[in-house]
Image (cartoon, rainbow, N blue to C red; front, side):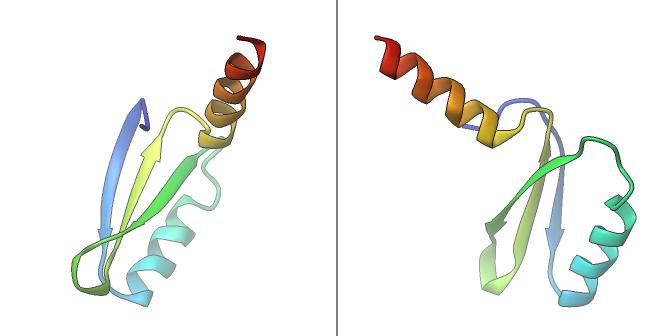
Length: 65
């Protein structure tokens, strides 16, 4: 589960993905994930937490238990 979702974008073309990437290239600390959407589209989810950090924290907690 992703917590702290700040924005969702539905990308339908490669040009949309290029525009989105350029628009967010200079955003400090942006974290985002891409998921498959309907009909070969992409859904980009911006979130406050880094998913890699969340997975490491969960794995560390499970290892300690």
